[in-house]
Structure formats: structure tokens, C-alpha cells
Amino acid sequence: MRALADQRDIVPATDPDAGGHRSVAVVGAGITGLVAAYELRRRGVNVTLYEASGHAGGAIRTSRTDGFLAEHGPNSFVTSPPVEALLTQLDLQDDVVEANPSANRRYIVRDGTLRAFPMTPPAMLTTRLFSLRAKLRVLLEPLVRRRTTDGDESVASFVRRRLGPEVLDYAVDPFVSGIFAGDTETLSMVHAFPRLFELEQQHGSLSAGLMATRGRMPATSAPTDSPTDEATDEAELPETASAPANRARLISFVDGMQTLTEALEASLAGTLRLGCPVRLLHRDEGRWVVEAGQDGGARSRTVDAVVMATPAHVLAAMELPAAMRKHAALVERVEYPPVSTLTLGFERSDVAHALDGFGMLIPAKEKRSILGALFSSSLFPERAPDGHVAITCFVGGARMPERAREDTDLLVERVLIDLRQLLGVRGEPVFAKHVYWPRAIPQYTVGYQAVKHAVDETELANPGLYLAGNYRNGVSVGDCVASGQQIAQRVTSYLTRAG
Ligand SMILES: Cc1cc2nc3c(=O)[nH]c(=O)nc-3n(C[C@H](O)[C@H](O)[C@H](O)COP(=O)(O)OP(=O)(O)OC[C@H]3O[C@@H](n4cnc5c(N)ncnc54)[C@H](O)[C@@H]3O)c2cc1C
Image 1 (cartoon, rainbow, N blue to C red):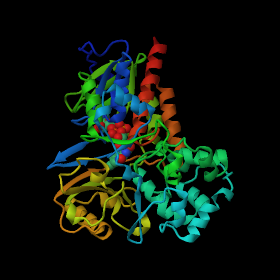
Image 2: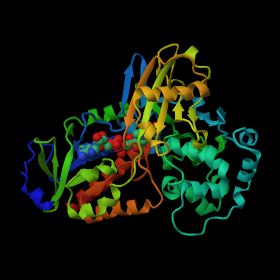
Image 3: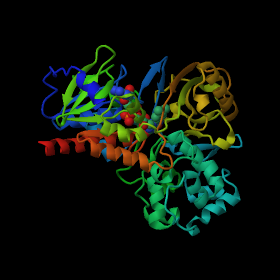
Image 4: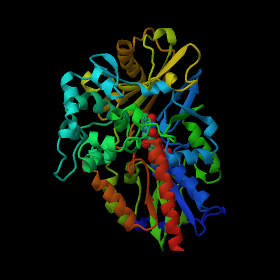
């Protein structure tokens, strides 16, 4: 590989903004790469941001057609202090829209009926989502001994052990589908839900841990929030236990999620190379040579450091130095099951359900085509024209990967069967937007420590090379923002040390 790389022409950077002593290539202009590039630039580093596709934003993309706003990927995210700081720096606070307070109501489907998820202890006692036996089992949770054996444990095993099978099937399974589009039997508890895992480790039980951490958990979170946003924690938290003064907000933007990536893109004018996939990396006299571009038009550039902010599997298709390839083999095998998002618009009078909540999550036991659906036009304003509603459905994931791959007509047909039975939808949709993600969200499966170790080893063996993205520190948009900021900080320290 090195020999091949050495034969290429190294074209010196011509623009003054690159090729200097403190120059960094960021590969991948999803939210992680955009934030990393933005933060590096803010710190005075010369950045070149390479993006394989024709647009920045990665999984974040919004379209508006005939008055319907469709999010292709994430619909909302939970803020944190780093996110709030970024929104302020980008002057986006006025564009932010907070989710309607009714978003606190999340429906779970059981026996074909929508049941509000109980958010308070009294609601837990009276809910019809769980049987009496399941409620008693939850009450016994403090008495369940802490797991003492070493080794990774699946989410399913952890929840069965602590809370019983019914809570697994009708609470955790649907929430896990909402966050990871994943399978509780294969996801790792410690890696997918580190804070819940820690509660057991530190306090002996989830109940004791939640009591001890009252007020320190985020106020609200989205079904697709990551481990560190603790969607499941919140599900088990009494509502009154959250809402500190600087609470986490569940937000989007007036014109949708793309507002965030567009603002970052605008602030990076001159540094972004669209349609410019990076194909090769190699080390040369303590610096990094990055070869990027379409077939025939590839150009090389030498920089001081590289941030790889692509999905993990991208590494498989790249020419890499041997010291990187050795560890990358594990990283590039991270699974990303496919997901289709289908935003459907209806006349309001054609939907019987009040759509008064965040949306509905559907347990695997219910054997439906949809993993979950967001009541988009209830969540945020101006998602549908007057007199209409928009519902965003998620299909596929680890549960039913083949369903995600179906063509639009078949998908609409299947989804409509569910929506008619569950939400009382009549008539035909007046709007449909289907987006297929062949590799949607990385799965933090049992044994994921080996992947994290390989990522660390890759960096250790390749000074000046950094890996970031949603396969490393959490899958939510908020996690990716934090990941981009942290990696920029590490790169800056490296550049300072390297002189
Ligand atoms: C359908 C869906 C719904 C989601 N919903 C939510 C939600 O509601 N809330 C939430 O918080 N999170 C949600 N997520 C998760 C979140 O959106 C993602 O984890 C996050 O956006 C990933 O950002 P990233 O920058 O790490 O990766 P990506 O967005 O995947 O960006 C990586 C970029 O790298 C580029 N690239 C690849 N190869 C190369 C190469 N060789 N050279 C240059 N560039 C390359 C790609 O084109 C891409 O633009 C959702 C994700 C999906 C897919």
C-alpha cells in the first residue's frame, strides 16, 4: 500500500488556507466532521474538509415539498451545554424550535392499541401497558442483586434480570428500536446504555441509582437519542425528577435539522470540498498525505493531522497505512442495519387519532412493519400545510432489515396497513417522502470494547490521525457535536505538542 501511495504525485496545496504547518484534513462532512472542522478553524487551524457526496450534513437532511417538511434522518435532538454553546456561536438560537410539551407523551403499542408510556410512579401503577405481574416485578427491582460476573452483557439480559421480560418487551425493546433501530439481544448494555449500566454498578440497583441521581438526568429526550442522552433513563424517571433550570431541550429548527449543518457549512466557506471522497491516507515524514477526488481527478495534499469523521465501514474501501489497516479491520466491521424513513402527509380529517404526543413505538412482539412513528406535525410547527398532518415512520433496522429495502410503493402499502389499524387513518396520503439508508446507525453490540480498543490503538499507532463519529461516543446528534468538539481539542493539543 505504501509503495502504491508513494508513486502518486503530491500536489502542493495552492491556496493559502491549506498546506501550512498547522493544517488538518477532516474527512466526512456529517455533523461530526462539520463540528470538528468548525472548532479547528475557530482555534486558528487551517482546515480542509473533504466530503464524498455532493452535499454536507451526512445523515442530517431536510426537504420541503408542497408545504410538508420531511426530515430524511434525525428529526430532533436533545441539547447539552456543548450544543447550546454551538447554537449561540452560530447565532442559531432564534431559529431553534422546542418540541411541543405534549412530546413528553410517548405511546407504546400493545395488543394493537396505543398506550401512553407511564412517566411517573402513579402512572406506572395505573397503566394498562403492563400487567400486574410486570408491575410487581418492577417493584422488586431494588432487591435484585448486582451482577458480579465480568464480561459484557446484552441489553436484553440486563433488563430481564433486573426488570423482567415484560418490561423488556414493552418498554426497552421499543425504545431501543427508536434509538438504535437495534436488537436488545445483541446490543451491549455497557456500551449502548453506559449510564444505566453504571447505576447498577454504583448503586446496586436502578431504583437506588435513579433516586441518588434525581435532577441530574436530562429533562427530555428523543427516541433516537443516544446512550448518553439516556432516553431509557428518562423513561424510568419520574417527570418531576428532571427539569433543572438549564434543562436539556428537545429541539429542531424552524426550517428543520438542516439549518444546523447549513450554518456550519456557511461558516466553513472555502474549506469544504464536496464530491471529493478521500481514498488514500499515508504517513510521510511525520505528516499525512491525503489523496482525494473522483476517479481520474484525484489530488494529494500533505497535512499535519487527519480527522476521519466517516462511518466506520468507509475504512474498508480506503488505502491505509499498514499501522492503521491492522486495527481498522475490526472497526470497519461495525454493523449498520438499513432503515427507511417514510414521511406521509394526510388531511387532518383522515386521521382519527389525536396525534397528541411524540409518536408511537412498536415492540417486536406486535409484529408490525413500522418500528416507530413520529407525530412530526404535532412535535414542531409548520411541518404540514393547514388542515394536514405529517407522520414520519421508521422501517427496517436490525429487527427487519429486508423491510427497509422494499420499494416505495410496497413500503407505503405496508406502512398504511399499520397506520390505518393503529391511528385510524382513512383515505390515501396526500404526500409521501421515502428515504432509504442502506447503513443507518452503528450497533454497539456485545463485545464492542474490542472496537473501541481498536480505535484507540489506531490512534496510538498513527500519531496525528484521529477517528471520530457516531460509532465512537454515542449515536445522537448531540453526541456527534460533542465528539467533533472533543476531537478538535485533541488535534489542537497534538499540533501544539508537535510544534
Ligand atoms: C434515519 C436516522 C434517524 C436518526 N434520528 C435521530 C434523531 O432523531 N436524533 C438524534 O439525535 N440522532 C438521530 N440519528 C443519528 C444521527 O443522525 C447520526 O448518528 C449522526 O447524524 C451521524 O453523524 P456523523 O457525522 O457521525 O456521520 P454521517 O452523518 O454518516 O456523516 C459522515 C459523512 O462522511 C462522508 N464520507 C463517507 N466516506 C467518505 C470519504 N471516503 N471521503 C469523504 N467523505 C466521506 C459521508 O458522505 C457523510 O457525509 C438518526 C440517524 C438516522 C440514519
